[in-house]
Image (cartoon, rainbow, N blue to C red):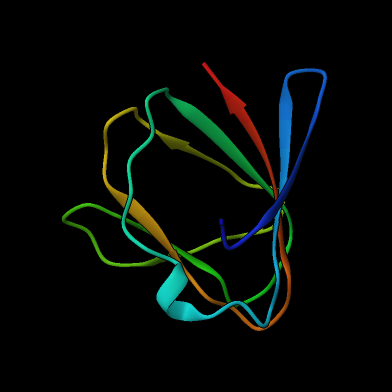
Length: 87
């Protein structure tokens, strides 16, 4: 079970994290492919990459996450909606 809802449209993932998600479910992980993550909605959420401090996620910005790089999200004040493109 994942801490988000997800659907795929034309090879793009739309993923939503609810504002009520348990912070303990937002764990460190890595992905098998490079990803570009564009923030569509959300406030107060952060992205933390391995060996770095958490950074604010800004609506409209795209974040690149290299494959096999540990990262995690930190819970914000509202739902978080992102668009994910895998390379």
